[in-house]
Length: 173
Image 1 (cartoon, rainbow, N blue to C red):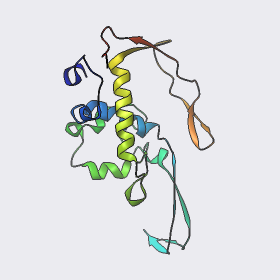
Image 2 (tube, helix red, strand yellow):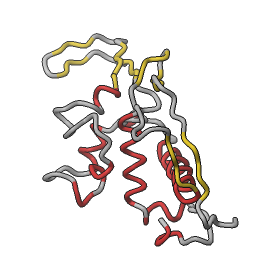
Image 3 (cartoon, rainbow, N blue to C red):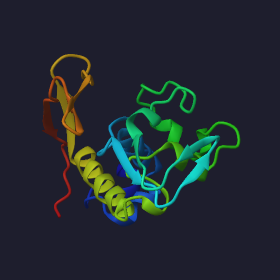
């Protein structure tokens, strides 16, 4: 981060393309903990998909949480591995379009969230500033990432408690 942004200013939107690992961390975090784990679609007309007849006006609920942790699509699906989103570490011929079919934190296709690009900018910049300005301490040696369902969203069984420790040099503006 310091080599790209420097120590005299905060990270900005223009810095994000030069920070591929930060972008990979954001994508991996959203893959494991999607903001909306259920995607809802309604068929406007009847159709057949892989031998299944789907009547008109059928509501389809996609469990994005399960799709993004499918062991047939992801190696070590429950592990936090941002490297899987770095282009140099992708296995075989998998490209961004193929990966987009498996990574659905904001939905996908024509019905995907129109604010997805803005969300990645905001989240990437916010996490970047937190990493740039603070070292983070936790109680114990590991964070318990166990989740539970709280309505339509997931919550941590044991809330995360971190102590921000200011870095020696924080940008002035």
